[in-house]
Length: 270
Image (cartoon, rainbow, N blue to C red; front, side, top):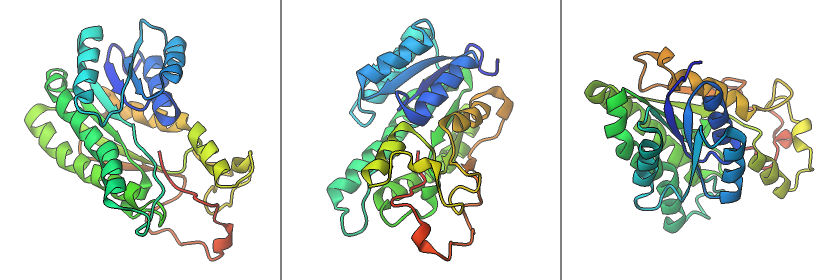
């Protein structure tokens, strides 16, 4: 097992990509701190994983002291901390006209300052185990869609943080910091989000080839499979790297000539 006896915090792990990562970590031999905002969903995940392998913490990651409480729970329950996965994020639709400072601050507080706070709180423990940080970003970090302005900026900031800390924390503490940028992923919330945009219930069954060359979009389990490498010892001294996980080259790809095929709100997000 690639994560045997490792202790890992996965934020935003009651649904979607975070849940898939937590499930894969357990399958690879780790013990996991599950985190989210919904206790009922978290309890369901714990029941699936087993109380001997996972424990739940329900709290907004942006709340003062939340990061410290997560780290304390991990060490008190499992005795150490080997890795953290910063997955929790808010996807807020907004453009330059609909984004005010309050919205911008809210998005940055959750998507950027939350991960920053957890890295800082976890660093003393990760330094002991020569552990790893994995940030879950988005391909929107490079510029983003017009209606994902604040979200895209926040993910761009996380990418800069990954590269900066990937250098300094590894040289000074032996802690690796890397990031994966998922493309369009079929999570429970993405299914509901698109239905709320007016698409039919099975919208994901028929997608334009320009957005889904494979005939489908990515699955949370596929993001989770890629995460294992960065959390395991297999990635060796690699740090400060950002890897895009999408089924086509996001940067430099030729745009579609017929924009009428673009699904409403077809955001690439976690």
